Length: 95
Image (cartoon, rainbow, N blue to C red; front, top):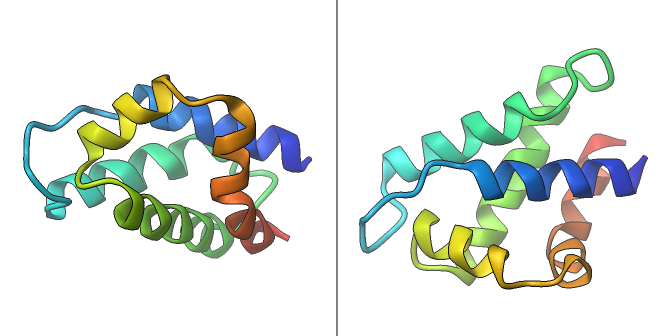
């Protein structure tokens, strides 16, 4: 199940809307959260758990990248193991 969630999260980030801003503005955050929550099956996880997971992931990526566009570009050039390591703390939010 953890691998499924991690793979799902990666695909969400890859398809998230790119922004041309210099920081994580409110729209970047909203787009990230929306894309993240859409990709998590409602029948497997409660809305609260989905939100906690996506909020955790957002905080990690906001610390690591200056904006959503940079995060998306970096993820395209990052191997799966690194991405899984980044979001490992967030997977616990779904359990």
